[in-house]
Amino acid sequence: MYSKTLVFTGSCLGMLLFGVSLITLGSMATELQAKFSLDALGAGTIFSLLPFGILAGSFIFGPVGDRWGYKALLILACFGMFLGFQGIAFANELLFLQVSIFIFGVGGGVINGTTNALVADISKEKHGANLSLLGVFFGLGALGMPLVLGAAAGIVSSFYVIASVGVFTLVVAGYYALIAFPPAKLRDAPDAFEWKQLASPLLIVIAFFLFCQSSLEAIINNWTTTYVTSRGVMSEANALYALSLHIVGMVVMRLLMGSLFRNVSQVVLMWTCLLLLFVGVLLMQVGGANIATLGLVLSGAGVAGGFPIMLGFVGERYAAFSGTAFSFVFVVALIGNMLINYLTGVIIQTHGVEHLVTVSYVEIAVMAALFVIIIRNLKVGEQ
Image (cartoon, rainbow, N blue to C red; front, top):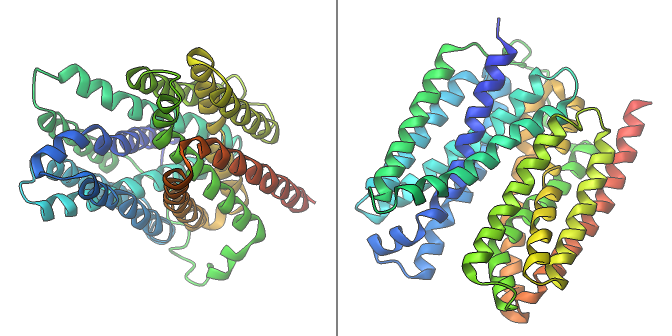
């Protein structure tokens, strides 16, 4: 018999690792470029392996977890991340680095999807609130890695810091080995799942909502510093500080959603987040340094709701094959992240960085329209 508290704790540890993994390559970009004599194009090619690895891991975890359970899967994912951390730290050949980054991404994708699916599975109610608390640890990991690297600067090589952080993945794997997990859903029912169940209109619309959500998070994270510095609103150092506050806004909002706002309707919370997103982008567009910083904090709070709330809906409505359903929506979301991020780069290169806000407004509008459809489908399902 498994303990919900132990499983939730393990999920939070895994999400912390995923937050660390997403920020690690960006934090080490300068050092890796110097070590391997990479130009901007070469570095971009190397770093693109991470999202492809995460995409592969996201595709794998659901069907495997539903059929055979999550315990072995999580342990293997942690071991893969350990190998990735060590490869990034100690690789002396470019091919070894490339393989390490891809394995690193696969492990991260598995852990991200599995921890979300587990929290949904152990939640009898308040799925969105519990997933919001889980999401806090993603933010802590994303914020913590640059702080650790900054504190160690001048004392020890960043590569040794990366290797040391990698050892923590083995500690987490040991924790997973010691605790029990919920049983596999489809192990004793080989004919219970049919792939056509993924064609549910509600699941498809949620997937495309997260397609927009994931890509909007990506373009804000990737292009905001360029946007505000090109407008002369603030220096690059202050822009990076403001972007950190964007993540703080997300963490605080998710913490509130999982605690103080726990009993507030998920529909009300999602509309609130969409409004905060719109206001945040607007303030970034029209304000000076202080107003733009406030806009980033508000937009951080705005992006806080998308994944926990939508995954909560998926966990509630598709509990019989939640892992596979989570895999489906994560894969669509990651494709959106990669595709829209690339298209935004093309638009900015062709028409200027000021069109970052144009793309953002369009995505927010599409998300609002999709959410109306999601609400209608949810009401139909309740009848």
